[in-house]
Length: 319
Image 1: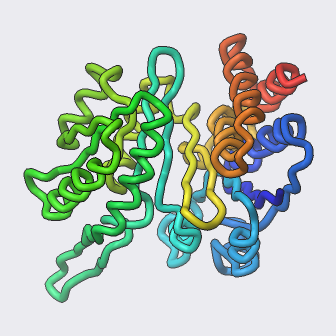
Image 2: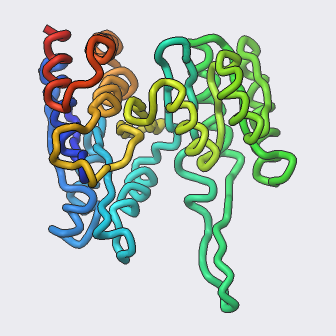
């Protein structure tokens, strides 16, 4: 199985190194191919997602990506984040899985990833007004709904659909389609919740949630909130899945250029993303659980280790 590796920027190469070491131990038969992406790709080629990298991603079984972003390009015409959005769209990885599962917290946020405000029409009018448009087609909502219900069937059979139906037309359509799809999953319960209430309830009564299905921007915000309940975004992994091609697996945190090269970056989110790749991208649930258990055992034994030292601790757990 071929996995394309995109190390990323800032601390990306450091945390990716520990993930690759763990994968070589947990799944030594994988073929790992590293390709240029992000800020370094801009410096080398002028493009954050070179065509060669995109072609390799499309031909792979899975893509393992580190965090991207570099202050050098924050105000530039070509930015690393543009390559990230394009890669998600090209792979059509519409279903973003953001699990928050540690201690007493066990919530899975299923975020629609290739539609909504981040991909709608945007621009500047002659009078100086700037606009971004939230757009969704019912087909986009239906497929993320079905993904959420299928995942809930394997968990606690409960879905909460989060929207802003009291204000937004897109949310009213979202709620209607979620209700229609729910009729095909009579074994799974469905509740609708407004996004502002969902944010409050995640903090006050987390255990009422099993699977949350929501649109792109709401999911972006709520998943970071949910990550804070398990120790912060440094521990948070993600999986972005399509129906036909390879998935994209990456930690939630940013590239943290201020600590790059100091050996203190937390590799847990990257390691857990590698576990999600084994499970959801490559169909190797046993290997995924072995890696996930090793990461949490190492973390609970001593969470104050440096980047490489923590990687060593995970390797010992895998031995």
